Length: 127
Image 1 (cartoon, helix red, strand yellow):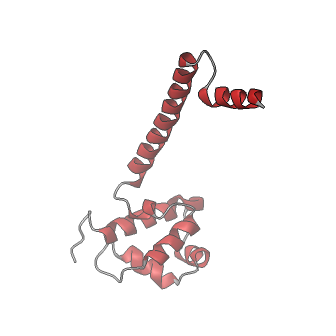
Image 2: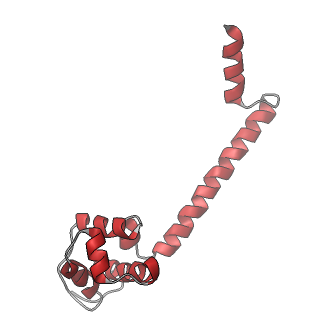
Image 3: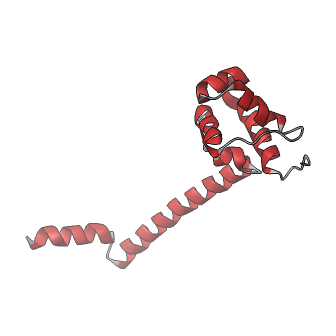
């Protein structure tokens, strides 16, 4: 196996190392192993992939490592997790802005009352 930047094993190793360095000012392999309930050798094997072939962990191990680091598993497997996180944040904001725009449009269309509120008022007044 070649040490290719796009190889999932290299990506996992690089992202795990980065997350370990970010977590509480540099968590070590022993601490992460304890928190993730995995063998320290497992973490060592994952990190060794940056230098060449090593045994691949199961998705369960990847999930345990992510949980112990307080992140989502995809953040360990994505080629550029920082960019992906920024994009996700952008789309969340866009979704909120779009929802506000729809509510404002409904208010304009239905005389200053949001559709959901208008329906609720009508059903309360009918009884």
